[in-house]
Amino acid sequence: MNDMTAGARARLIGAGYAAQGLGYAAVVTALPAFKDRQGLSDAFVSAILLLVCVAAAGGSVVADQVAARWGSRYALAGGLLLIGTGLAGTTVGTPNVLFVTILLCYGVGLGTVDASLSMQGVLVQARLGRSVMSRLFAAYTAAAIAAALLMSGALAGGGGAAVAVGAAAGFAVLVGLAGWRAFEPGRTERSHVVHEAGGRAVRRVVWVCGMLIFTAFLVDSAVSTWSSIYLTDSLAATASLAPLGYAAYQATVLISRLIADHVVPRAGRVTMALGSLAVCGVGCGLVVLLPSVAAAVTGFAIAGIGVGVLVPLAFSAAGEAAAQSSDEVIARVNLFNYGGALLGAVLLGALSEPISLRIAFLIPVVGVILTLPVARRLRHLTVVEPATRPAG
Image (cartoon, rainbow, N blue to C red; front, top):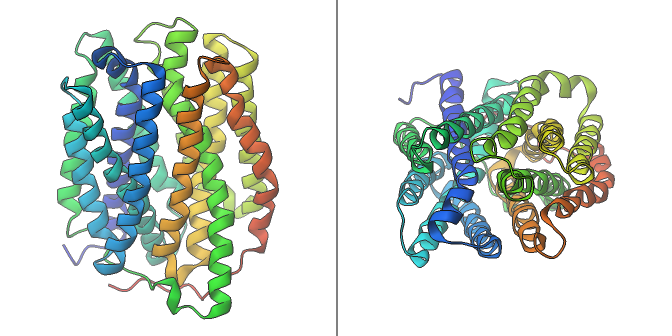
């Protein structure tokens, strides 16, 4: 497998993105079923999500350490195997303590894969010499759509959420086993090897790109975690219709990612980042202003356009601006993901009873407004060292 071409490795890494998207979408669209089966309240779901985010942040640190010692391909493969195991464990009813433990294991795998996927994507993009990050993320999105539709079909047909979650578990294990030796073997230096001025530039890259990731995942986790529950509990949508809000969101994420690799180089990262943030705010604002199923689904879809561009844009900018230490920088930027997830998933749930879940969707709107000035700083990011092709 060591003689694989860069293109073949890119496709295998794309399968890793698909496995991550399939698993995450299966979990979030199964939340209503998990709530009913386990007898959970919205507040308890929020507490679980908080713990999963903390576990995922720990997984991102694990990915950084594994990448430094053995390479990010082993972090990615191992994380996928852990995700598959965790997903499989959620398909059966268990005592809540064990159920939470299983989700925490899934969370560690989630964070490990989140960070190592972006490490792998940046490395293979450098090897190919052209932009492919948005298309790699598109594989994640396409799989997420498939999971949402599979969940909708399974619930409508009486098969239950376990069908979709089990399929995601099996796919993650298969990709993890295939990629153990075949993912991109390249590695980058640690940031301490970069000269002092470069070290300051690395920190600037982490904060600017990290805040873009924070806001993107604030919007993403709000929609991903609460769209199905909002449609079901607040707008009285049927169980089979509720996952379609998430599917509409992921559909527009997919469209934007399929074209972003061609549009961003022409329009410029600053312009695209500002536009993406604005679109995210408009989408979430529509959910707040018009409490109907049609308006909510439309708002989720609009928000997806912005998120679809923003996430790969930020990771690509970080990887290029700190090319010689991209593994470590990507792991640090990825940690901002979980800060956004905490606000988007946990805080919205905590506020669902005192102010209603609809009004709670103002939180991502506020986040977007506060992040707009940060996006302008993308033009000031400097390349720490000349980009080089990864070794291996």
